[in-house]
Image (cartoon, rainbow, N blue to C red; front, top):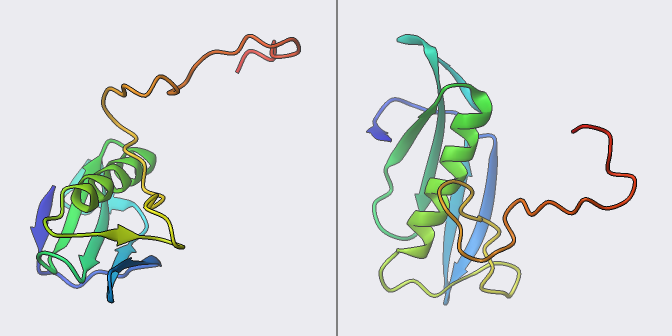
Length: 120
């Protein structure tokens, strides 16, 4: 992940609350890295807490860059000092940590339910 000063286009955003203050998370679409054809980039910015920097997260393809950006957003939000963040009135901000090991026991559990034999 790098911080950039280059202008970015953000396509989606989520507004969170930090007490009386508003925190906005903006996310761009993954795009090929013009400097490296084997890498994709995904930009995000969090305003209202901490630095207002624009971050670029990379991955081997668009999905990897998107997942890395979402996971990095989750870490930034969960570790923000003095932040009592909420979304839609709940502390679940809707940004799960989707990379690395999980300890909550519900990550990709195989069900082997009848009819689940489509090979996917």
